[in-house]
Image (tube, rainbow over all chains, first blue to last red; front, side, top):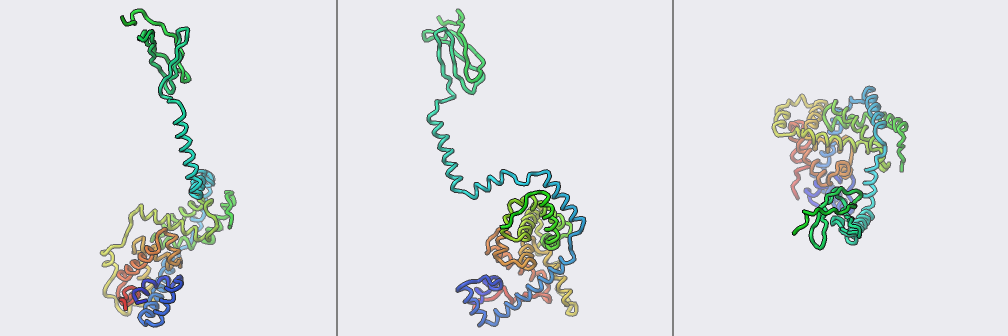
Amino acid sequence: MNCKEFTHDLPEYLDRTLRGRRLAAAQEHFDHCPECRLAVQREQAASRAIRHALDRAAGPLSVSTELTEQIMAAAASQTNSTPTRPSAPHAWAWLTAHPFRSMAAGFVIVGALLLRRKFSPPSSEPSFAATDRGSYVVDVPFQTEAHVFALRDGTVVDTVVTTVTESRANFTSSPKPDSSPP
Amino acid sequence: MAEVPLNPDALRVDLAAWLQAHGNRLLRSAYLLCGDATEAEDLMQETFLQAVKSVHRFRGESAIYTWLHGILVNLNRRRWRKQKRFVFDEELVQQTASPNVQESEIDREFQTNRLSQAILTLSAEHREVIVLRYYEDLKLHQIAAQTGVSLGTVKSRLHYAMQCLEKLLPEELNLFTAKGTHDQSPR
């Protein structure tokens, strides 16, 4: 270890957090290098001076009775107005604490949605069924109004606009004589 | 693992105990971190309110003071980021460092005052690492854990903070001479 490496490791050396070979190398360098021993002494003197200066700068400050009361009052009103244990952070904490379970649950949910989409009939297309009494039943999900063409022998004989309730419209065709094509 | 009561009444009692046990030390640390006594009191209040709000997250894995101080450091960082108050610059160094200090003036008291003045004029980041290191007596890895940065970043900040102090202090008061701890050439 040279002086530059020792200087780099000096904070950990002083912290006594160096371990193993690095500690042995630092100790050996310290024992044999008078310049670095002096550097350690200066560092320790600087630390003492800074500690003393910080103690002196902050020394006279203390928590006043007013500040204590202010903090207690603010904390009490906060405790009364907000729930102590919010639910959202708790759920988030569970998710972050169990990443694999969260991922598995996510895959299951996405898979179920894909399967449902694959096997369920297309819901946006209206289905159309004629009854034998001239009335029609139209399935038009997610719409409030249906524009229905009544057919007879392949030609449009009537158009009806009807209001849809509960995704299903029942109506009876009433063809007008003049609406039939020639 | 210590269980922290969530009952508001019990919490109030704890808060009073916390204030009595750690209030002064936290307030002093807050002052050294932010450099203003009034701001330090605000910071203290915010710290305790935040502690009450997030008491359910405290698992008792660290000492209460360490936990409270961690909140204080975070709030202070949020505050300085908001205010963008990075005081340190070269002009300030020129103003603060007076080149002709008489030998007779250099006594311990004067040196201490100059040093504390110099520390309070450091940038927020450099002041933070100095306060955590020398006032809170934290080891480098503990500073890294509390500030959420890497060990290398802490070492680098500490190094530059000391360099700034070297610049801020007149040569006569300088504890960190050019042949000191930072400019060793390889053997």
